[in-house]
Length: 327
Ligand code: ASP
Ligand code: CP
Image 1 (cartoon, rainbow, N blue to C red):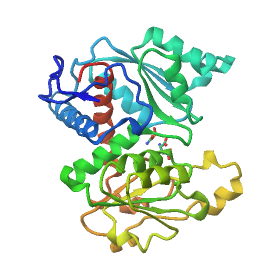
Image 2 (image 1 turned 180 degrees about the vertical axis):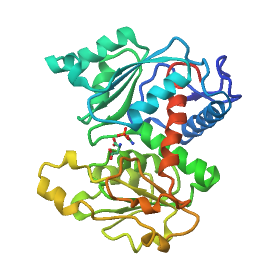
Image 3 (image 1 turned 120 degrees about the vertical axis):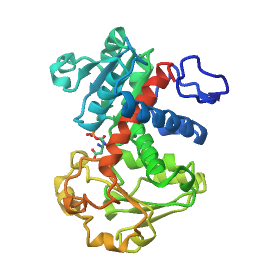
Image 4 (image 1 turned 135 degrees about the horizontal axis):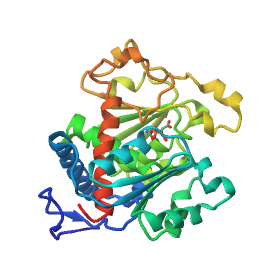
């Protein structure tokens, strides 16, 4: 929980300091509304610093181990950029097949090894719960960069930051957020639905029948008193939507590729469909996209997905500074 003490390291003029020093970030369930305000305040300052000076020495001498057992472009490179913009450095293990994992080394031993050399570990892994296992093995902070179909908490934090920056901090209560696509296997929406349940939002889930939001997530969100509704067609809810969060159908998670073929291309956002949406709303996507949003829509001011990935840099800078005791 946040403490009221003033950080000796904090160059950001914040009074409230969340005590994240040395902590793992495994799930969005660790965050309160107050924590989010703190993270977004620091991220906002990070954005200003990057715009003004580019790189600065807040984490000079600190080392990040970037351990990826699954492909990544944004998460991996934004954590690298975040660490380097803060003056630190990175051990990149982006392709575990060239590491001793290919000789059969366990996740726990790999993590124990990396923490001898690094101050913080970022992990992406195909199994749900892998980040928690790694965190148990490690004394140093482990940040979950996606654990199978489980969670992607740093993505949800950057998603919420995007909503705040784009639509205004005071605006989130009362918003309607529509999640579209693969809600069963999409870890980003599992984390985001949980995180947004801290606010008075309305959540719509639009998916093919076989890709519905897991019951477990819906039950957790319902327990917070958040209204949720499920649909298979977008038309009905698009006009009321303030944030349309589009996801890729996660081909790599399907047991049966025939099922994938049935649902791929189920929804495609394009300028014609978006005529039915408000002018004051945003379209988000964690990316990569593989056809769910037509490139013809990219120039529309409501298309926030490229800005969204830039916000990821600032949020990850904030998180690294927090767990390393410098924010
Ligand atoms: N990049 C996101 C993830 O790793 C979304 C996706 O891959 O579709 O979960
Ligand atoms: N959004 C996201 O996690 O992207 P990558 O898979 O490219 O890291």
